[in-house]
Image (cartoon, rainbow, N blue to C red; front, top):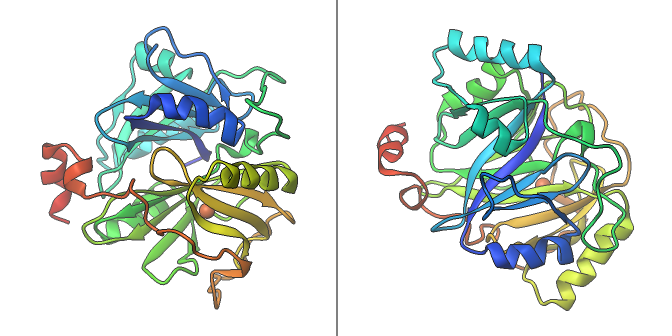
Length: 315
Ligand SMILES: [Fe+2]
């Protein structure tokens, strides 16, 4: 499938007011216009797209949906046909959902472990319209998408890999350097970064481990780092450089209980000619100073509705 990357992420949150301060003031996000049909939700922009993050008021803090961007209408329709041929249950979004997401077309589906995904094409955009919430050099999003996402899965069925690689045409990047069972994938059209999504196996656990966002300069990593320290926001890992990517980054905990990794590219990412199996996670830094799984990682019983729990538990 001709997928660019993650176009947007949606969350449910109990902390809309906290996010409204934190998003612009810590991360430099722009508060976007909430759609008329969804006035209570908080929308953030990180580039010239209408939005990249949506925070919908809810009973708990959890990931609500992962929005994959098809390259365009033709590729979007081809993806629908492919899912249907392979018996994947999809739900077409109506005009109201398209309006809320700011897209031309959208459908919804679940992966083999129960996470809610969407695929869309044609998100609203205006060139040079992004204004950061605080002085900030800007995010690298645009043609490569929002950034990357790492989620924990309570099951590790072979269908999960088949779903991404064989059905959706993702590239398997490898297991990463973590100690546990992890798999990293990047979408077919992503030639900019090593991964769009990773699943980490955590029996009895589910939820977002972290979201990685690329900023345009090391200065923006450093200034975000200072603001996080000044505000006393808990960190997961200090500044460092991963073995498998030529990037510098640090991780701190967002109001949603998951970590945000603020990343700058020290060199362009190179295509991997072999499966990378690093001796250690990072070449320098990245001292682990907080939990690797934050409070956003909960049990499937807390995160999935009962009917979904019954459907996805047996795997
Ligand atoms: Fe990351």
